[in-house]
Image 1 (cartoon, one colour):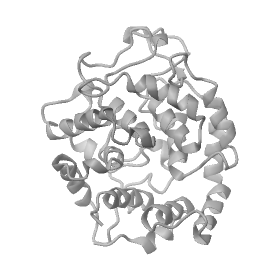
Image 2 (cartoon, helix red, strand yellow):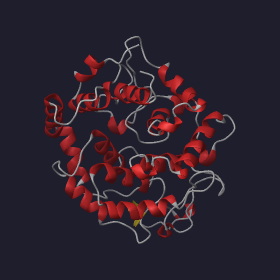
Image 3 (cartoon, one colour):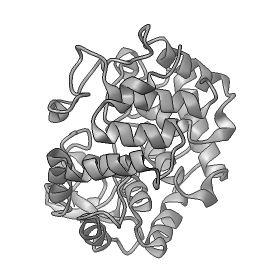
Image 4 (cartoon, one colour):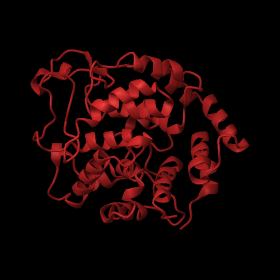
Length: 322
């Protein structure tokens, strides 16, 4: 089975752009890559995302799984390859940097009900469901290195032997997710590994090994271990884009960034599940969607998606399966 490169580069400009960079190994100064980037900047849907993000922090976060949150749109444009050199990005970065807590992590606008241990008030705060994704995005967009280091130093310090727990800033009172204190939070580990994956000095850090082992153990023990009500069952295994929450493609996209994991049997088992979902042409079809993204080509379950296919092949390429 071969990568359907010709089909991919015929897609929307962001699919072509990332295919040329991530699968074909072309560079930013290649004429075809530059043309695709120019087309991305001219696309109305992309322009609307950038304008919306310019109003950061946006609406209050009451549920981190809400796919329409600015938080998730931020990681999407970061994944497309935007930087401070692109129109509108400097404003976004500046607004995010205005909301750095005294502890170091970046804050978002949050409201945790009293019955969940929060204050019931709209307030700037952070949790391990959000601030690592902000760090990840800032690092890719070109945020201030000193501010990023301050945030990461604090967040890395929260890691335990079994990875990262459910943790939140002091502004959120006694808030903690629905799980035992000693358990790791699967999404916190995914988010922290994602953030650390784009910081070279942490590429082989012990905390990354702890977090990765936690996620892989949850996979191998998925029938019995479900901390904080995160499962790795049928819904988890459905292919879905963009990367919002805790699912197979998102977990694989993060774990395969760490080359030292490439031969881990548990990771290979996960990769085999992904490979089995390709059709005869090497294309992947979404099996679940985020309705907030239904107007995008990956927001349907009827035909193969170029963006989803690109994400899948990029994962497989990282571990030498193509």
